[in-house]
Every structure is written in C-alpha cells, then in structure tokens.
Amino acid sequence: MGSTSTGRSSDGQKDSCISEDSPRSRKISNISTCSSIGSEETSDSGTGERKIDVPGLIEAVGTLILPSIYIVYMQLPIYVSEKELLVDIKNVKFSLFPTDTFTLSFNDSGLRHRTMGEEELISLVSACADIQQTDIDTFLRTLGREYFKLVEEEYGKCLRMLGSNMIELFSNLDGLQTLLKSSPKFEGVHTPSFRCEFDKNKIQIHYYSPHRKPLEFVAGILESVAKVLFSLEFEMQVSGSLTETSQHHIFYITTYVNNNNNHCSTCSISDTLSSDPSKSKIGVSTFCNSFPFHLIFDKDLNIIQLGSALLKMIGPHVPTHGRHIQDYFIIIRPHVKISFSAILSRVNSNFVLRTKTAALSSTNSVQDMELKGQMFYLQENNTILYIGSPSVEKLDELIGKGIYISDIPIHDATRDVILVGEQTKAQDGLKKRMEQLKLSIEEATKAVEIEKQKNVELLKNIFPSDIAQRLWRDETVEPRKIDDVTVLFSDIVGFTAICSSCTPMQVVNMLNSLYTHFDNSCGIIDVYKIETIGDAYCVAGGIHKSSNYHAHQICWMALKMMEAAKDEKSHDGNMIKMRIGIHSGPVLAGIVGKRMPRYCLFGNSVTLANKFESGSEPLKIHISPTTYE
Figure 1 (tube, rainbow, N blue to C red):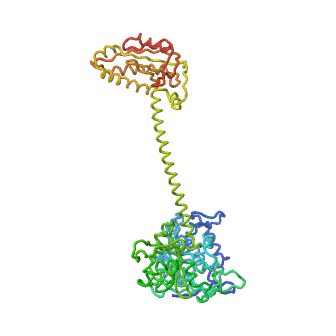
Figure 2: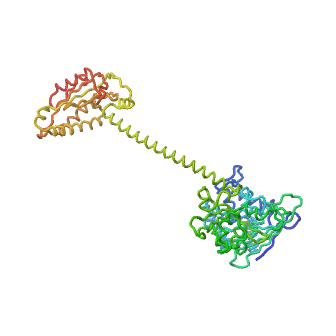
Figure 3: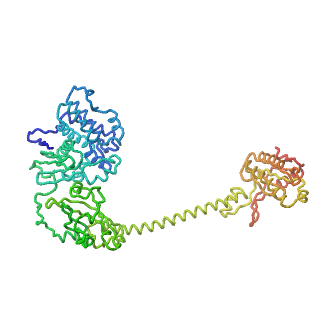
C-alpha cells in the first residue's frame, strides 16, 4: 500500500489541502467554534479554544490520534453540502449521519471523545465516496486534513506546546499515553504509537497500529499538522505494512528548505552533528560513569553495554547466564512484549524495568530494583539505549537493593528524592506524634466536658440552673430576695401512725414511690422542688425562673399531688391522705452550708405557707387569700 501527495503552495503547485481563505475554511471555522459548547472548559479569551492544562492536553492528544465521532460528524455535513451534490442520501444503505449519536455526543461531554472504530469510519467514508463519485483513499485523505483543522481550532494551543517542530511533537505523543489511558474519556481504547527518524530534509514517521485501512486518514492529519502548525512545504508517501498482521507503517515526508526561514520546523538536530560513533566527544568509560544505570542492547536483545552501577549487579552473572536482556530485566510499563520491534514501537514512552538480581543471587540479601527511564533508538548502529534512575525513596532501600549513594550521580534527581524523603519521613513522624497527642488531648477534653456536664446536671437537680452554673465555676452565690413567689407545703395525714405499724423499708418504699410521682410533676409543670423532710414535701414557683403564672403552676402541682396520693396505698391497703397549704409572697433565697449545701427559702411567706398546711384538712388544699387573688 502506498500513495504520494504534495503540500507545496508557494510555487504555484496545486495544494491538496483547501486554502485558509476559501469559503470552505470559513464555514468550518464557524462550526468548530460552535463545537466548543460541549467542551468542559474553554479559554478566557472567548475564542472557544481549550485552556492549556493537563486535562486539555490529554483531550488534545486523544482527539488527535483517535478519530472522534463528534468531530467527524461535525465536519462531514459541511464537506458534503459544499459540493452541492443533490443526492438523496436516504437511498444509501449506510446511515450517513445518525442523528441520535451526533446529538448525544454534542450534549454529553463524555461522549464527545468517543472513538470511531475502523469499520465504522471506513463504512461512513465509503458511503460518502460513492455519493461524491470519488475513491475512498482520496476522501480519507481530505477528511483527515479537515478533521485536524477542527481539532486545531479547539486544541491548537495545547498541541503547539508539545514541541517546536514536527519531530518533537510526534516524539512526545507516546509519553502522554499513560495519562491518556487513565482518562475516563479514552479508557479501554487502543492507542497508536509514533516514532520519528530524520535525515537532512527527510522525515520518517513510523506509525504502529493494528488498523491498516484508515492510513490515508492519518496521512491527511499529518499533512495538516505539517502545514497548519509548522508551515512546511513537503511531499508525502504512505507505505503500509508489508503483511496483514504487521502493525508497522511508515510515512515518508520530504520537506522543501525555505532559505528565508532560519527556524527549522522539521527537527532540532543540527546538520553539523556526525552520526559516526568514532567521532563521539565522550568516551565509553566516562559515559558509563555519568549514566551508571544505563544499558544498550542490539536487535537480538543482547546487552552490549552497561552503566557502572548495573555492571556491579549484573556483571558477575554474565559468564553463567549470558547477555540476553530478558534474563536480567522485566518490563513493568508499558505493557509490551520483550522484542526489539515491540520496544521500538513504544520507544517514546516511559519505561519501568525491574531487575531479576534477587533470583540470580545465591543469597537473599539482594532485592529486585525498579528503574524508571527512557529508551533511545540509536540509528547509527541499530541499537536501543535505555537511561534510567533507581526508584528508591529511602536510605534503607539502597542497602537492600545493593546500591549506594555513590552509585547515584549528582545530576540525578534521585539523590534529592532520597534526602528529601528522609527529611520528610522525620517530619512526618513528628507530625504523626503531634497528631496523636492532639487526638489524645481532644479525647481527654471531651471526657472532661462529659464529666463536667454530668456534674452540672447533678447540681441542677439540687439547685436552680443559674445557681448550679455559678457553683461549678466556683463563684460566690450571694443570698437574694425574690418579691413574688408561691410556696407549697404538703403533709401525709397520720404518717406517725403508719410508721409505727410497718417496717422502715415499707415506709421508704412508700415515700419513694409517692415522691417519684411528685418529682415527675415538678418537671412537667416547671416548678422548683425545695426539699423533703420526712413526709413533708416543699415546692416553690417563681424561684428558678421568673413567671407571671407561678400561683397557677403551684395550684396545678397541688392537684397533681392529690391525684398521685389517691393512687398510692399504705402497707395496710388504705389510701394515703394528704393536706396541702399554699401562700404567695416575698422570700429570701440562698445557699446554706459547705458540706451537702442546701438551697433554702426564708421569710414570713414560708412560715405562712407552712401554717396554711398545718391548718388544712385531709384531702384538702388550703390556699391563702394572697395566692387566691
């Protein structure tokens, strides 16, 4: 499979790409600007172009190398309508523009980046090519050119920051594939790989993909990248894989040198550099010491050179195990089989290797070590160079892996990572201890607060709420005069006779049951229990909080007490009879005593209330005229 195209436009030759000033270009610009409506985030300038950030960079690369259903469907109607073909597409067997798919991809930002499959793309292009009466390859090439123009309008800034020339741009695409595959928008999609070679004005872009049919579509994208981003004049040839099972395809690009342009848009390699290894300015020994964790292997995967640190680890095993790389290393990432062509296809990716030194060692003192680094293809002798750094973060990991700080060169950031890691470890230990101390203090504070609340609640059961708070704070509580209070005294009729005819335990149980009902009524009616002395029960209203209805509350309390007494029986089965006296007036209230203090009421009003109780009759409530009024 092969084809040729030209990208020249300055000398009168026909350019297969549509002119930037044509109506076609302007129409695409309008549509692609509208397409940014579905994008998650656009630039602040309002042009519809994606911001330069990591998510935008991932979207840009993914949309560039994986044909987006959304962008293809945005571009095709414009291309067909511009040709002014009066064709009834309803007669076409393939549904040219499935409305539901396009609508979903336009409204749902997640579906905007759904990749179009190979068969779907070819079926769509085949139908369009039949309508326009052109061959599929020509339509694919044109579709690829126009596809990139829409991509460039939305992600131009992100794509330009990948490299200053075409070689740098496509060489850096593979380095982002780890992020690309971890993105939910492109999860599970097979991504193609790129590798570039350059010799003077000739570029070879090696394209690794199992999809052979859309090569012309990819060629159209490459043409637009060369022309739109880097203003290159070029000719391109497409060489598909030699076999159906091979995934290796090559795009040959020949550029025309512009003598008026001092900046090279093709590559950054100077023509004055030699590719002859004998003319190298650095010796092998110096290189091995400068990069102690590097290795070079040939197309048969035999190791032909090792850095000084790796030589200490692997060198002793070479006489017995040979030089094959698979005997000493495992490729952790990317997921490729260990073969020269497979590694070459992902040469621009980040490679993580793990040593097998633990299995080779006769003792268990040496652990396997991971190396993070990059592969370089050496064209001059058809070998691959790997330069890596040990993946260690702590000093104790060095000894376990059989390496030392001296093995790590000063220019390697791993040194700083280890030393900073140790400082961070110490700081984290201190921080952890401080957090544990903080938690223990917080727990102790909560426990103290709980105990305090229990004590306050206990004090509130004995004293009014404001008095209890002041006592807890160890403040002095001065006696106070309260002008308007209603006091209740109650007494059990015949209590002395009851006590003389029953046991003390029966008396206690009887009083406990009766006073429990009284206490519940105090809480319901919101009056304050002063004290109990034997069978006497004293209650006051308007003491613990000011109230305009304290007389009413005490009267309700008296009725509740009478009802409760009717339900209680003495030991001989007789009903308990009570008498109650109530009086309203001013009192003096204060704390009496240090040990087992009591909140007591003093004054003539208290004496009168007691007198009214003494003068009351059984089952009667004696109210003073003051309370009645």
